[in-house]
Image 1 (cartoon, rainbow, N blue to C red):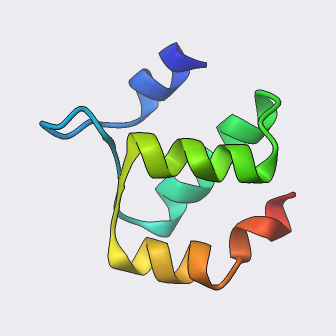
Image 2 (image 1 turned 30 degrees about the horizontal axis):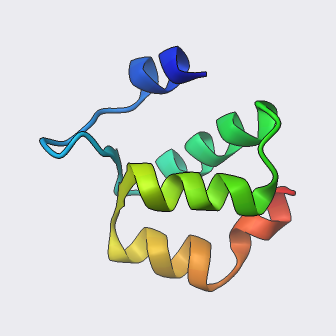
Length: 70
């Protein structure tokens, strides 16, 4: 999984994956879910390893849209 994430997502100078649009968030989240992460585990992984924009945080996380992906 680490190889897939490193190939598909850019990291910033703090070594965090950049998720500044909703589509990159959904793609990242789906990869984690396909690799047997529960929704809360995937979200915790994203919080610890990713840099999020305000729009991603509000639209995808605060509004609980990530829960619809399962």
